[in-house]
Every structure is written in structure tokens, then in C-alpha cells.
Image (cartoon, rainbow, N blue to C red):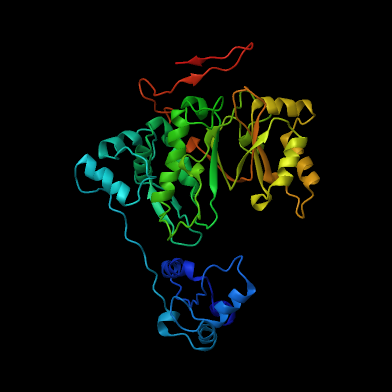
Length: 421
């Protein structure tokens, strides 16, 4: 405002975020005259807010309004006119050799993990992971930050491979991890609100790497789903520079962030086009689609009208809903006349009658083992699909001689179900 329009500006933010905005300014070369009223400012009385205005800045100790008047009236200093951008140092490629026990403690105590045991990313293990792609290990994959405006850190194929090792992945999973990294999206956004994330894989790669899209797809019974979902969190921690209280401020946090509701879509048993095709991608392409929201609800067993009732009963994030529905639900919806899920989205939005009608914000993902016509309602917003294929080796997915697989639930046929080992 000051540099472009000549309008004096006095930015104010609550004291809880003083360190955050000052660091942000240094990262972008903006030396602003901040003033900090006490925290919190939401859901407190008007008298309390008047007290903040008439009182002192808890960070500087000076009267708050005097700081604001000074910021608006006094000429900028040379340091304010010519601020220096502070760059964080590059990460070291290797750590000093040590015992396995000490290295595990080092990762944990430095906040480089999700608190669960990891596989140490040794040079040999990272080199093996790199066989899962043809790309140059030093090629930049993307940039990420869990904050909105702070400096985004770059990371290479090799660094993503280290994360994949830590999460317990094998080379066959690596192209999906690289696609996640290329999105630049953290699974842990910096917000006082406790967000959750979801990722859905479509296309041939689902079966190539043994992802689960049937019975228990969102449960901890599948190797690929578990480690791929975890890798997104570990990337968010390390590449997104997630530091509790500094760059990550979720009040309660969200248990979904351990695995980020990682699954594939049940294209084989769906009566609709796959989700990625509905978003403009080819059926033969392998993709990963990303979602974010707050709540995951067990919605019910009845399609159509019951979905509308649940939608009316919750306050969605940005007007978005994503339904995770068993194939039996999709079949019942088709019997009701919904051959096109977007037409169903339009109908539900029209019935909701919000101020801004955006049916594209209501999405359907077909996942499940046809044990019951159940669906989950989430207030998740779809925001991105990334193609996995560019990260797959020309020779195809790199698999172990004997690929690692957990027990697979058999599809129900002729009223009979079982477990296969």
C-alpha cells in the first residue's frame, strides 16, 4: 500500500502470531511496523476488546494506539526502506555417522518424524528408492511450506526418496510420492483450525502397486495406502518446515493427518466414470487427487435425500462436500436416476439453496467392498489432481522380485466372501 499507492499502513495482528509475521517479513524482505494487541480477539466481550485498544502492546510494552499512530505518521527509516531478505541455510545432504539408536533419537528430537518409528534413510536405501524413477536425483521436484506466505523450501528427487524411505515405502510407490511432492501442497496447513487431508489415486497404478480401494480401504490393512499416506505427512513436516507453535498452529490437530485418508478409487465396481476422468483426465492416466477439510462423518445408508439432510446439518468448509461412497451406494443412486454424479451435485446444491451455487464443490468418490451401502460425508474441498505417469520409469513400475503385499480381502461374489493370503 505504501510503496505502490502512497497510503500509510499500520499492520496489526494478535500477539499470538507476533513471531510468525516477523519471521515472514524477514523471509520476504518486508520490514513492517507491526502492532500486537493481546490474544484472543475472537468470542471475547466488547469491553475486553476496548481494553486491548486502550492498553499496551504485550510484545513491545508500549501503548498500542501510540504504536499505530507512530506507524502511520513517522517517515520510514533506511532499514525499513531497504530491508534485507533472510534466507534459511541449505539442509546438509548427509548427517554424521552414528549408532542406529542415536540416529533414531536425532530424527525424533529434531521433529523430523511423525512421532512413529521410521526407516533410517541411509545412502544405500535412498539409492534403492531412486530406482523407482528415471528422473535425475538432483532434479527439483517442487516447493512447499505449511504456512501461506513464508519462504517455500525446494526439494529434489533424492530428498523425496529419503522421505519415502522414512515412511517405509518401496520403489514401486515412489512415482506416487513424487507426484505428491510435485503438487507443492502440504497435508498440514498452518492454521489455528485443525484441518484434515485426503488423497485418492486413480488409474492403472492402483493395481500395479497393490493399493486398496475395496473392503476397508480407509483402514490400516494395506501396505501401499499406509506408507504413501504417511509419506505426505513426512514431506509436510520436513519440506513444509512444520514446527509446532511456530509454523503449525492447529488447536487440537487432526488424527487423520497420520495417513491422510489415503486410498484408491474403486473404478472396477463403480457405475460412474472414475473421479479423475470427471475432472478432465484420461481414463488410462494415473493420478492422485488431493482434498482438504475439517470433518469426517458417518453419514448413513440411504442415498439421495439422506445426503441432503446431512449436508443441511453441518457447516461445510467453503461450501464443499466430498462423499466417500461404497459401490452399492453408487448403484442405488443410479437406480434413482443419477447416471451422472455432477447432476446429483447440482440437485443437492439447488436443494441447499446457498447464496453462491457451486455444484463443482460437491464431489463423489467410490470406495468400498460392497459389504453395505454405506457412505461417509466430509466437508472436504477438492483442490488439485496431479498426474503420476511422468514419474514412472520408461520400463514400468519398479517392483521387488516378490512384491510386498498384506492380506487382500476377496471381493464378494454370489453371496460369499473370504480373506486371501
